Length: 396
Ligand SMILES: *Cc1c(COP(=O)(O)O)cnc(C)c1O
Ligand SMILES: [Zn+2]
Image (cartoon, rainbow, N blue to C red):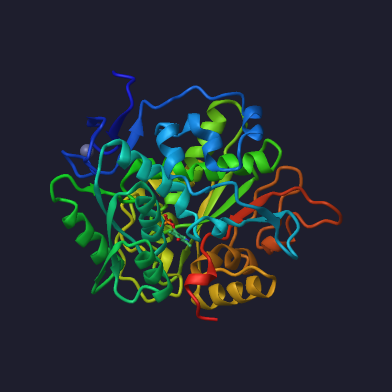
């Protein structure tokens, strides 16, 4: 067994040596993970002295730091603020990223990896934010970029892509139709498929979400990570980051991951509730949470396994709950797109299952809000991201 970094298919075990343009398993079309990448880290106390970007974790990222520094837009180390009216709940304000969503964490690492491969052209597909993030870093790196979007994507997101000089292809149909069109375009020789879903480099960028929380909470992670889930790039990244912290003895257990879907498109919630290992594709209903409306998540089995490994859950929120949650956030000074209000909707509506507590077991059926309430300072037990800016979605 080689210990060299390589791409590994979790489904059929085939290894693909790096560097590699392939974006899915050559034998079974399964998703690939980065394996054999286990770098030495500095003592984490060294992080604090470095600039407040995600490149403070350079040793943990699978791209050469020099290359990355040239395409960085200062992403990472977003604020963590207390949630009004919910002691112990904190909001990670990831919409303050350079392109307005958490996708910058993954995109900068993905584009650095593509540049390392010598790619001079890439294609991506997105409901908006991933495409914007990839297009911005591609522009910064001088790599041509074509982005496939489902027709009807928020005009603000399309405008942003055009600003970055990406070639925009609007595809009639669903988010899946856009993904299929991109995958087809990526068959052309020499084209890099900059898929935030398939390329594992993206997840090594989003894992910095967990590293930052660990630093911001004074060297620990919260009991509960509440995360939106469509394709699972933040769920899987946060899980990866938490596991890397655990492997180095920096946390003694993984936070439970409670993932949130929109009720109109919830294949992972359905599979979780049914105890299945793989999601079954669903026919999506329109939802205001366009960023998580993924009918057929390619990493679905991995997402379900990650959530279960942490003792977490997959829950749903309705469009009405999402819009109420967004209105409440806005009224408190936080301007997000509807998708980015889904986790807050889960908190407000009591959809987050209570943490089983050995000292004072919560009576079954108790509203989750009752938990963790006390006077004075409550340590942060739950963190959720505000992961997409309201500036590009409009609609208030
Ligand atoms: C991409 C995105 C999500 C969902 O991320 P997945 O990787 O699809 O799970 C949630 N919210 C916002 C604002 C996004 O841009
Ligand atoms: Zn395979």
